[in-house]
Amino acid sequence: MTETAMYRLNPDISLANVRICSRCIYDERVPSITFDSEGVCNYCRQVESLSAQYATGKLNGKNRLKKIIDEIRFEGRKKRYDCVIGVSGGTDSSYLIHWAVEQGLRPLAVHYDNTWNTAIATQNIRKVLFSTGVDLYTHVVNNKEIDDIFRSFFFAGVAEIEASTDLGYAYTLRRVAAKYGISAILEGHSFIEEGITPLGRNYFDGKYIQSIHRLFGEQQLRTYPLMTFSRFLKSAIIDKPKFIRPLWYLNYSKEEAQLLLNQRYGWQYYGGHHLENRMTAFYHSIYMPEKFGGDLRNNTLAARVRNGSMDRATAWAEYNSPPIVERQLLDYFLKRLNISPSEYSLVMSEPPRDWSEFPTYKRRFERFRLLFKLLAKADLVPMSFYLKYCFPSK
Figure 1 (cartoon, helix red, strand yellow):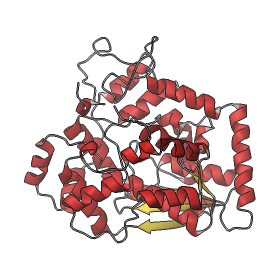
Figure 2: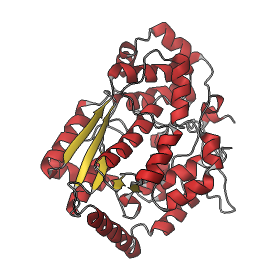
Figure 3: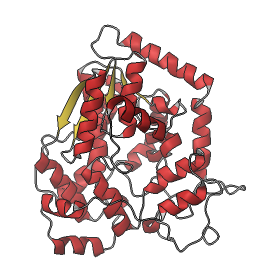
Figure 4: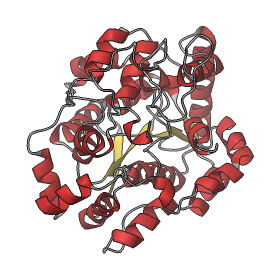
């Protein structure tokens, strides 16, 4: 089976006709998947390992997190802000702002604006920050630049049309932390609720973005925060902001977080995971399913089966239901990126291309694996980066 079918499971295929993890709903087409003698996939075992490592939801984990919070407070005691938190208007980042303030931290909220935000996301950010009194730093990328990058990735025929957002967001957090002398960056990721996304068609680094844009782009990149390899190392080794993921230590529930945010701040749900941004919505609900046969809802659904918040049959059924598609989303995408219907049809019908066909830093990450392992253990790079990017992909 090819990787182009890596996630999307045919609803006509029963659980008996495809090898699937005995614990979650990842199947044999997920990249680099293996099954042990009990039929449990390596991604479930990875979550088990992380849960043990971070003592997730246990007293030891809570105590370790309390110690981290105390260290953040101490290191930032003479500064206006003691931590940075990226905000998107989504569940996890909104909850993290609430949680940080409850812990007595003084966060600076940072928003990377690729100019494709939904109105709901923008209002969610405003509501939560206004009520908590948290200041906001926003980096807005020139819309012509970011659209040129998105357009380049579309015409390249690769899956990672959102790569620039992920990388730009990460580097913006690092730059803001360095600017204000802040030693801690808090991230709102939960492997309990989302797992660790398999490295299939979701790769991104600065060289990859440069190589695609040089081939297909037209605009000069003046406002886009490109994180090159040297900038990455400088931030991790010289500036040294620590990347802390508090939700890795907590027994976090996304549904409970949404209920709290709605009741406390009037926060509104935006209809689906990662649908708070219109480009992200296009990527998840149209581009990946229709061109690559991929459906990234699998990550969250599999995680929910693992943590017991959803039974396997329900998750399978939801996974094989059509994704939520915003009305006129495709028309908005075509008009904004100046792509004609005929150009769109041609690109969508061409064979998909893979990130490995273009220059990237992937092999360099692998060569520096020991360094990144040490940096990950010191929280100077995210542990998920080390797990996904520093080993050869199969």
